[in-house]
Length: 90
Length: 417
Image (tube, rainbow over all chains, first blue to last red; front, side, top):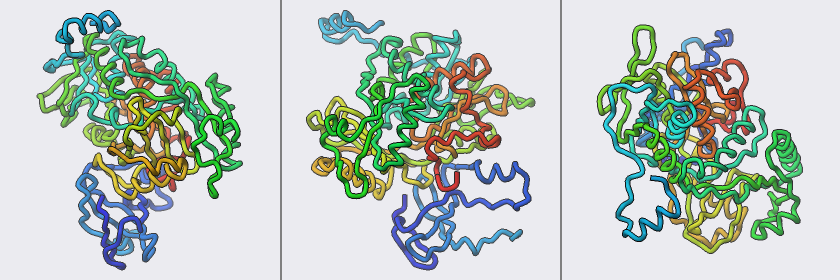
């Protein structure tokens, strides 16, 4: 695991400052079907390799971030503020 | 060859030159009745019980590495059945009963040691919860004893009883729990399966699952060519999402790394398996004298069999907080294994939406202790096309139906499940 994460707001920080929520999935519409909600809450693509996750900079700016990284080599490709990638429906 | 006192004497007198390999190294045939993907503990025990209990011997076990290279050799070797929920107790108790007879059954010394598993309680609420758990276990015919502080102090004088934040108040002891030599489990099952005609094919990686127009599995593409089968069974925990994806399935699983540690060898000090209730730390002492211990997963998705320093530090802190004397010891080795973290912390042994594809996955922290029952129940499912009665709750569709088995709420991210 990469030990340093470059937060877009705080700069390069140790990864212990962050808490990890998991896969950065698009939240379904509240009226979406049960199948959609089941897939969102429980099912994971869980690829071996490149993965996008929600990370919270809990001991920093407290912003939600999307970390794009490789879960085998631990390379980090990008860190962006989650608000900058808002879903079109919202 | 049967192993016995006689065989050891005979070999000793002949300079140990007559030992034969414990299993063959066959080339794959073009077709099998059953192919099991994954030659770990669960895959091998599945093959063993299919051959021994269910009369199916035309089986291949495909392993991409070598036998014993995966999680069966990367755990902390603990066996126990001290669970609370109905979906779990009978299953893990069945497993413990199989452990108790295993060495006689497969004629291999797995060093099953029923030294007792002690779970410590550090608050009144936790003590009550353990009393409830102990009662649930006894209702299912499983042994459980609730010990108070005095009894614990007599048994384990080296624990930190008066910790300012997490004093030790009580302990739930399962005397029949303990440890097993994990490599010998893999070797014993591999040998037992091989003796019954199962082909164990090492260094054979499955790259694709081939299906016909109706969607049924016809075989697998491997680095040793195409191998056909009537039934395909996946036992690839750690990589279940990857293998299931080859059949177009998405699973309620995320893969995480779990670390384990061994200290230098010291004189016999810790007689039991001890589980710290205020954190998630477990420790025992191996027969060589090394302390074997571990704690939580690293809490980020990882397929790398190596962990992070922050979790190492956290594990050591928990250990020293429970057993202050540990601070004087030295860690010899540490390693990581990749876990299928299912969304409710419980495993899956079930059929899949594809007719002749079977799934054994989602073992989270607890795959090793389940090895015998997992294999037995998976073999039952494959042979008879219906669940064994002790594994009937471990279904793939339980998340959809709202029947989670959330024993400890220990999924990959426990905050959301």
